[in-house]
Length: 494
Ligand SMILES: *Cc1c(COP(=O)(O)O)cnc(C)c1O
Image (tube, rainbow, N blue to C red; front, side, top):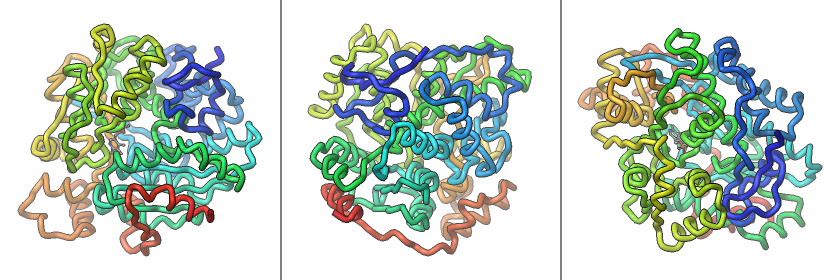
């Protein structure tokens, strides 16, 4: 079956996967969605014997219809190689009643690497397939982890350059250090005086600027996106849920066809949407549990059917989930309207203009696959301490939010729960160590805490952290949120 793509906000003409990857965001501001969610064309019983790369091929080929087998395998094998510090790419580790799916073994030790190590290959392959001569300028807003993962993925990739905007005071010290020390020659990193939503809105506005697009084209540039709105990020994220299912079979915990639960620490709704797509493809998932931190706009949405972003933005110890406008939710809204682009558009306009929308009862009835939960800052810290004290395993704060929510929503549960483990604790060392022993660690420097974490967990310090200890700061630009367009133009020499 050939899968094509169109906007969530208008049917219009459909396009191929490679064209959708190149464009990133649809012209009308909507997100690209597949004309149908394909079903698995292989038997689940084969999964335990399949490598991560083989699983990736079987899943991704169903969505990326216009990629040849050679093209797709080249992308997969180039992405999931020795950049990951484990051959299995995404290990599934059982601790304290949960199956933690460790998605942080890539270059920048966050789950964003799972998709961003393959996106540059998908993008350059797409450019070649479509005869694109322009340089592709990747424009990205980050709540901390996407930025570095995208920089690492696109650094020095021929035919591309990348500009990353991050909230100046909204990322962890290690996240910031990772970004501002990025050495890639085609990279540019800018802090903004604003929060993640400001950065994301600014980037969306630049994408929607038709005049600018024309100017760009005349100068031999075109924009694309590395944010999770790009279908080229969503599709690779489906893979690890399928892989985790195979690992549970391999570990003898389930048989083909048995149901599992999935718990995902959620911000922009990309990761959990991937698990929803996996379920729609035929993966036996009973509940998709959406875990939020104190910015619990999604929890409230699942609870009462109203998405209301008009609330205080809270900076938490899980900054990659500090988001009030979860972009990828638009793709779920589209599905539960019964693939109705006009209705989806109306909801999104209400969100933009009034700051909220309420879905219909009929739509709510289609959300029974989902459950919501949230953890306060205190509960998150307690969860880190509890799991460490019980098992010696150290969670990062994002994973801890999900781990707490697993306990509170699913209890002991009679079927296995997979908890998406989205970052290495080394990325959020300060929050993690203070959760374990505040009195002891409060006065120590960040990198001293890294050494303490090694001592306490026995987990090797990742190269991603080791390498930035002494690296020079190369990116110092800071701007106001309404100056983002000018900063981009200046960078590109307009
Ligand atoms: C990005 C991120 C999340 C949130 O994922 P979404 O796909 O935006 O919902 C959670 N944890 C970590 C560590 C992240 O980097």
